[in-house]
Length: 292
Image (cartoon, rainbow, N blue to C red; front, side, top):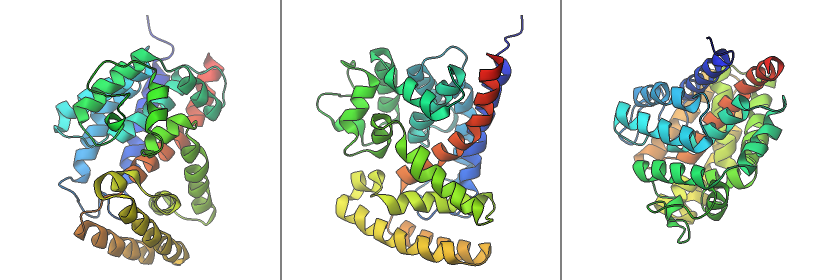
């Protein structure tokens, strides 16, 4: 018997891959994109990662923790490196919100999903984080990801929120996604910009809004604040550029400078994918809610 929700799961998986691919079409300063590789990675690594992770992000009947763990394991099987842990941590709750929808309001559904996260979700996510082995959540003494979880995933993320912007999203109902990011994306579209330029300006909005936590973990808060100041200036120049080619040239100049200094604003890039994914979900959610 055909699962009536199968088209919704497929649509969520497709939206996840599309968001990951769309982010690579913008010359995001310091990060990997189609215009330039960086930090030992190329755009194709992220495309392969997205395609491998997508079925687990949208898996029928999975919990948020299971989505995270399955997607990270699939990524490692595909590319043998951590390309997308932050993306997965952001997109798994958004996908779950759509696939378990009780209303057509994505923001409300995301808050519901986050509030319901439990210890089993934490255990699965801890295993995924340990597998990816980033600097981050495990630094909290009370929530060591190398051991069994003693609290819910939401509480563990709350403990990391002061030093990790992805943890901050969990603790604050994805406020940066639904406000800073989607607002920037809509403003860029209102100025008539195409998708890659709108994506670039969304990324810069994050980089200018707060110190990128990936930079903080690697180089400290002062360096991250300096990059934020540079990003604020760059964003103003790029937004005022009359033509896309000029805007992209300015972005690529900033990109070269950051990569020369081995600086990767990875959290801002992860948040950008989260925005692109969230932007695509209301149409799927409306259909899922109607069919449900």
